[in-house]
Amino acid sequence: MSREPGRPATGEPAAGTGERGEPPPRPSIWLATAEEPAKPARSAARNGLDRERITEASVRLLDAEGLAKFSMRRLAGEMGVTAMSLYWYVDTKDDLLELALDAAFAELAGAGAECGADDWRAELLALSAGYRALLVRHPWASALAGTYLNIGPHSMAFARRLRQVLARTGLGPERQQGAMEAVSQFVYGFGTAEGHYVERSREAGMTQDAYFRHAMGSIRRHPGLEGDFTEPGRLRAERGGHTVEEMRERDFATALDLLVAGIEAMVAREG
Picture 1 (cartoon, helix red, strand yellow):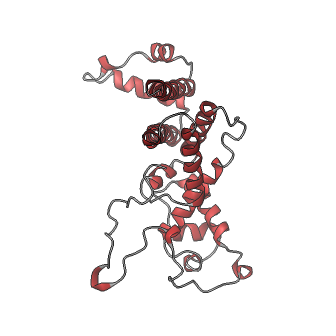
Picture 2 (spheres, rainbow, N blue to C red):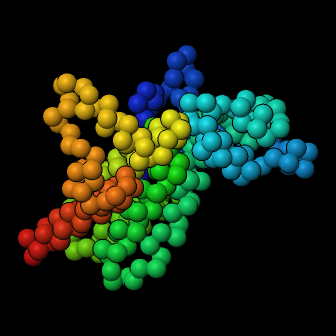
Picture 3 (tube, helix red, strand yellow):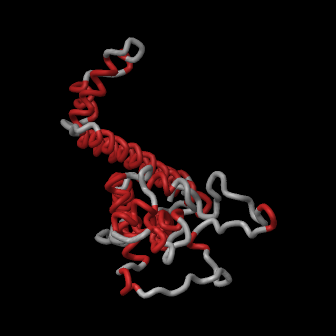
């Protein structure tokens, strides 16, 4: 969702053969071809494993400990198996992280389902809210979405729905991709920053409001920054909320209103 499908991640090899004439590594687990050798079958009854169970355990571990601490060895220990047994089901840790990312996007399948087909605004807001909530619920997902091609079936289904909504706005086809970038990149950035803030508050052992007061107090004591920030109480009043979460809700809603208004203005301008 954060990068266009087909755009390689930073550091990926260019097309062609790799060093010493080996074929280049595939850029995504979702681009595996029929020519690639299949992994030998192994009975799940022997160890209770299958790819779906491993993916679900990966999501839980990433939620609990974050991306930096994630490893095949750590996952195997959590599941009570050997690390080598996991490689019967995936080739690399990258493959498993891609599976976990797409499993997170599966949670967006029902977003906006209650909206009528003629109300593109309500559906756009519902899809945006769902994507934001996913990034906050799974803070590791934003890093992975910015690293991998992000072309798993659930991710692509979400992107397809967003394109379909924007196609109903009245924008010309040449404008729709730009509108999709404006919406998706805004939500990606907002949800990523919010997820990081929630994580920092939890790691500090504070509520979000307590962490906010602590941070603002520290900033006001810094000579070079004091004049750039208002008192927490005044800031809450200006942004329309009594808590950090209420302020964020207002900010998010305002930003989406501006995006919708921009789409409507462009449609009106172009007739």
